[in-house]
Image 1 (cartoon, helix red, strand yellow):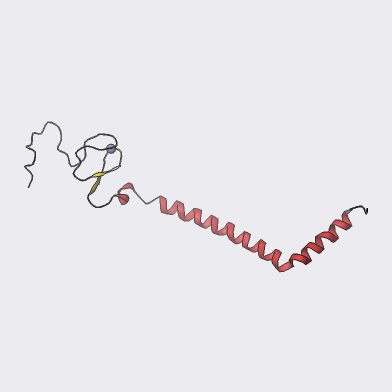
Image 2: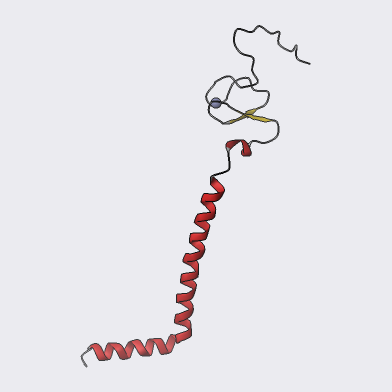
Length: 103
Ligand SMILES: [Zn+2]
């Protein structure tokens, strides 16, 4: 049984490099670096995309947003289905209006 010293390990490393091929090793290294770069770019884009988007952008047609909690509600809803606060379109308390009078 031969001793595995530094020269032998170096020889094994060289053989491994030879088997896999130098270009393959470079390719792996290159794709790894590219992947990290793309990952960083994606992170940046995520941050940039998240910042300007407001909850209002997510509201579909026929929906309105709660002024208190910014959750989506039906346009016809008088009270928020999330926090129960009156919606912006709802008449302020104290002002008497007959329901269905709006035309
Ligand atoms: Zn609300």
